[in-house]
Length: 348
Image (cartoon, rainbow, N blue to C red):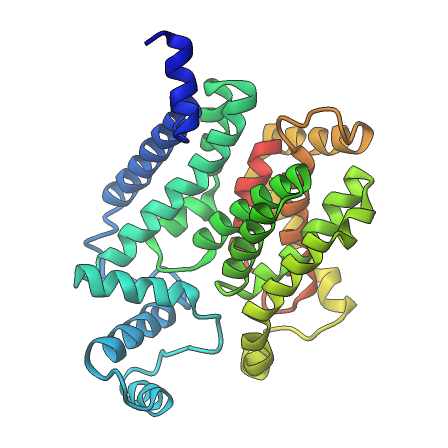
């Protein structure tokens, strides 16, 4: 077989040199995340790192116990009884996907440490996804740099030892940005379905995932193609996301809103905007922030200049995730910028 024939065969089977490189990046950065956990005694410390961590863990444990030992019983009555014994059940305060995935892992591994192992995997993917995306356009060295930009973010690497949803949401936001870019480029039904699944999963992981509603608006404004917003595939995709995630928020909004630290309005946004802008700038660092702003200028000036890497899609995703936390008055916490970091790293 000639080298050309081998390349054609690999491409036809879906396995390309780029695929091998992406797997290599995933293994590399997941290993770095595990090493960070081990060096910081993540698996031997009995100290919770954040106030919300216990609620995520206990909620996942409740789901595991229900499926393992009480399947068929009234789930609401079971949750209330569980709360009486372990008053950190928070189902309804957050969407259920993150906790449901942990419950599945508990079922498979039957060990609590799997929750931290999952954090290492998703943290590694937070770095590997921008690394693989960037390397296809700029080469492996720039790919590694993009991954290191992510792992250098203090909030994100701190979260590797916490049972929290922010890093997982960051992975889903990145997947949504990539899927939206593919939909804009290909304009086919598989891409529309891929965006629907990834966006719905993000929204069902954490409320700030709702920021993805801004992604198409910002991206199409940068691309100067607002008409695509009314394309049948985009409308169907939006409807699927709404059907998958909307009912949960309608039923649980009052429960979620009771946990908001601030009130809706411009007074909150006026306080939140400089705080989150500062946290985002500190997360990227001076070189990363300059790169991010420079790529924004390029996207505005030449919206169709480089279709091999749709910078506008990743810029739009980062801005969308920052916009939602400035609008929704849940709280002001630097870790809320985490979902914007991997997509921003591609531009940076």
